[in-house]
Image (cartoon, rainbow, N blue to C red):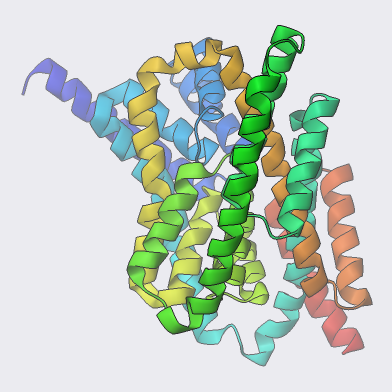
Length: 398
């Protein structure tokens, strides 16, 4: 074996060991995952410089998909090429998928038994508080100016009125580009293309509403198919900007409202399991796939939602410097990110109506939100605390 082949093999083994460890121990969401990666690859192993690492962090915000998973894929690609890309990405994802799949089996087999009900009662309001905390924190960063705050608010309002999530994100990005164009040209010579563009956005939304209505009317007839499930998660993985929590907006809009494959309660339970498990939040797709269609559904959903991230990193890694230097792309992404926060806010409102059903649930939700915002308690601990509080209040007050 040549020295280059031996070094490449050793590099891949190192990547597998590192990202299996991180995938098993990285709780707390993408920001925490990325901080752990920086400690490992910059400070301890010195594989890349801090400046290069920060460039990769910025790049993950330029493409759809889960940021921490894409960071793992980027590092693997830099360290050991295409094989490293595959090894690091799969190693980071695998622990969460296995744990989530096991919990999905337990949930389907035993989740409806009376002994589990008190814990699930407390988990639901805690999950809503976790999302609310993420909305507040991310919103402070995303709403950099009044225009972006208005775009985010408009996306939230559109979602509450039933607009398609993907089109809300894309339309927000287009509006961001329009605002960038207005500022750059001082308002001159742009009215000729703004009005037609806004007209096209309006037509797209009307078309999406018709398609959504058709999907609702035919969902019961078509039934659940693996191809439809896989296409749904492939679409989500291809357009998921912002935080992994935005996945919840797509699940509610697609699988709960359009297809009727999940109930609001099952969605909240799926999100709760995603909070309990380490690794990427998008492993929630594994849970959902199992609930909807067993082991085949779990495998198809998992592969579909993560596949776009591998492809995006492979294609875009060489052109990251040019993308980061584009002011127009930055304007687009700023608007997309704040629109994603708006979608998350709308989800909080939707789910609160289903979960905050009495004073005990409201109390748990308020306590979890306070702990998350004021004391910055880890999301997994908030969900665990909600489960214990739900059990305690159910036992004491019935």
